[in-house]
Length: 179
Image (cartoon, rainbow, N blue to C red; front, side, top):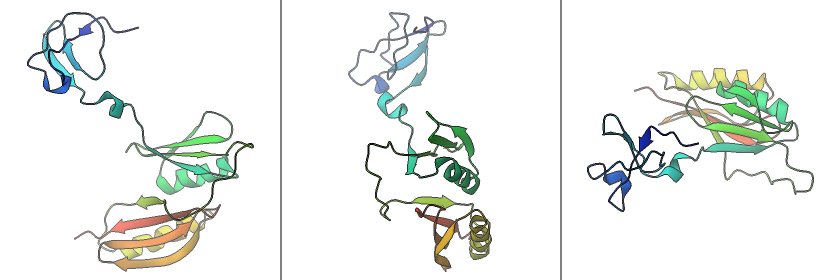
């Protein structure tokens, strides 16, 4: 049920620019428009595109063993592991907003092809010695079942290493140079 304390109506075809012209007329919540406090008659927020606000980006990884793989990625990304929509679906939640979903595809669907076109990039904070940081990180991930595809190397922008998770999916770990 709409919150009856908030209302607005805009005399403009672009509600996110129409704060000056907003006139309160009803007591309903209108998403994607200017929201005005009825008691103050002041604009509180203007949502420029409410469709964009409702989208939560995430990375989706198909897995033969979703629980095991989700534990690996929760560890590798310092995320919070949560159950998903069924027993074959897990979420790794991050306070940065980029979440990972790991699932087992339905039996009636073909298994997704593996490839290098898209990969997860795991980035730590910048370091004075990024190669040392990446080398230590590689060892921790290997202890959890990861494999090295390309040994850690130092580049102008930082250090990186291409790896595979316990099921052969490619990902890269990266530490920028702290200049």
